[in-house]
Length: 496
Image (cartoon, rainbow, N blue to C red; front, side):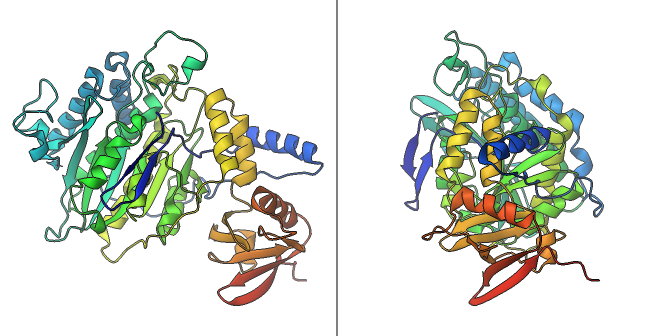
């Protein structure tokens, strides 16, 4: 998609640039790449592990979660990503077939339609061909994308407090790039003839996950306290047009949206790994999601950055806390090879369960709120490496990006003016045992400054220095906590 800017109802500038996720895969390939990088730099490097441990025990699953299962999720992906859908380009017949499929399942579940009935109008513009305007169009939110007629699909699970407008929103886009001729295909760098881009991972996987969540919500014996809004966005591949339209015309006022969860490309988990972006926009959101991921056996890598690469971004611009779940890039991204037979159904179901557990906790506890916070923009170096990975299909660029910008020693870090801010740390990590806390500002370790001031190590070099410093003998770590300057030793010396 081409870069596109427009202003939301509140005047916030929304950028819908060529997209993709800051998602990197840990594992053996990363360790090999890290060793090679260490040889180049003349020093050893250690690749940081994702946050969260697979297989950690937890509480019993919540009611309804048994409805989220791999076989059903994969069946939905296969329909949406079948050649018969023609790649689901916005405004195409295959896209409308996908919309009808989603609506039929929502109707069968008895989930309330929450589309724009007035927008469907007497002209019937909101109704896909073959649909009954009195029923199917009630789920649709029509909008124009140039000359194309597009449709968001909006549904509502009513909460126990009908007088309140507070709600949690889960979203996923259901469109893809069709034959790739209107832009968005990376295969055109290698060949010119059109080919169906089925978009099984991007984003039939997220759309299927959202349908699985709808089934779980419909099976609840008692509805949650807050409402839950489900939205399948259209025309995401054309510049986040569906989500930009929705934030201007929400089913419920956005000021009452306590959390937006976005599912985009969640079908390639590579052995139970997922990436979480943007969650630092909500105070306390990481502390909720990371343990839940561990309970589900997901190794969750947290990226504390914000980029305008998917449908969470327009909500973030309206100061709604967001969390973006993805399993990341792969060589089939925006290419004809993104087919259903490459989807990892078990991992897809796990990601859907994580989104369900998060949404249910946020919806069923009215006292739980996630105060919105501004999130640092993704560094240009990280975005450049992501672009190179997407264009080339070579995962080595993603491995390098993880080494330079990923977690360090169980810490999720954000660069600040005078150091590295700890936005999350694993509770059982050595640095937590040494006394480090979320919110601390790391200023110096082993005498090396960590901020971008004169003679300091900024950005990736600061992370590299920190990684090297904490893997050697006990190191003195200088930090700032509020207005107080503190020192701690890591690792904690063995007590004899």
